[in-house]
Image 1 (cartoon, rainbow, N blue to C red):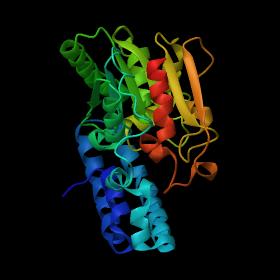
Image 2 (tube, rainbow, N blue to C red):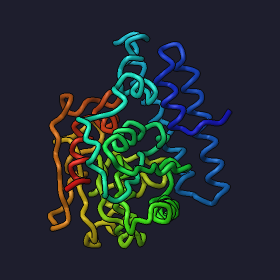
Image 3 (cartoon, rainbow, N blue to C red):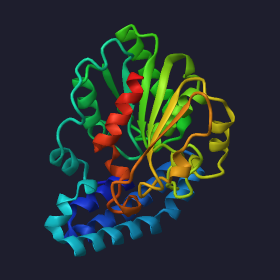
Length: 307
C-alpha cells in the first residue's frame, strides 16, 4: 500500500520502537512513489524535493526512536503531540470557558488545517468549541492536505467559500488557519481574489516572512521558504482585511516568532503567547503541533473573532 510521506511518519509515531523499521520502510517507499507520481504530472520541483527529503525522514525516524527509548513504548503513546488520535482522546472535547452567545450573528467561520493534516481530525476540537460557542463552523477538508501550492489550495478554498456564502446567506466568511492553513488563508485574500469574500483572517503559527525550515518535499513548503518568490509576493500587497497572527514568543519548536509576526500595518494584529515548553519543545514534542488543542490559543482566536 502506498502512503503519503507525512502519513507514514505519523504512523511511525504510533507504532513504538518495534514498528519503527517497518514504518521507515514505508517512508522510503512513499518517497519513491511521490517522486514517480509527481514526475508523471510534470512537476519537476516535486520530484527533486521528494528525492531530497529522503534523508529528512530518516532523521525524523531516528528522533522518534530516541523518544521511544527515553519514554518507553507506553510513555510514547501518552505524549499528546505524537498522534492526532491520542491528542483528541486525551484532551477535553472542547476548549475555553463556554460562551454560547459569542458567535451569534457573526460571519460563518472556515477552519484550515496544516500540512499533511486530516482537517476533520486536526481541527475537530476547535470546530466543536466554536460550535458550542454559537459560531456557524465549516472545515476546509482539503484532499491535498495543504501540501499543494497555495494557488491550487486557494482555488479549492474559493469553492468552499462560495458554497458557505450561498448556504448561509452571509456576505463574507472569517478564515481561521493553522500553520500552513494560516498562510494559505492570507494568500487567498492577498493574492488569489478572496478579499471581497472574507471579513478577517486569523492565523495560528502561520508563516508570514518565510520559514527557513519549511518542508521541501511539497509545493507549499517550497513556497514558504525564506526568500521565495511566493513570500515576496505575499508581502508586497497591503492587507485588505484585518489579519491576526497568533504565535508563541521566540519559537514554538517549529515556527519562529520572527517568521509568524506580521509587519506593522493598521490591519495587522500580533498576539504572542508565552511558551508552554522551554524553547517551544523539540522536533518530536513541541508546542506547534499542540496549538489546535491549546486553550490559550483558542481563547486568543475566539477573542479575535468577536472583536
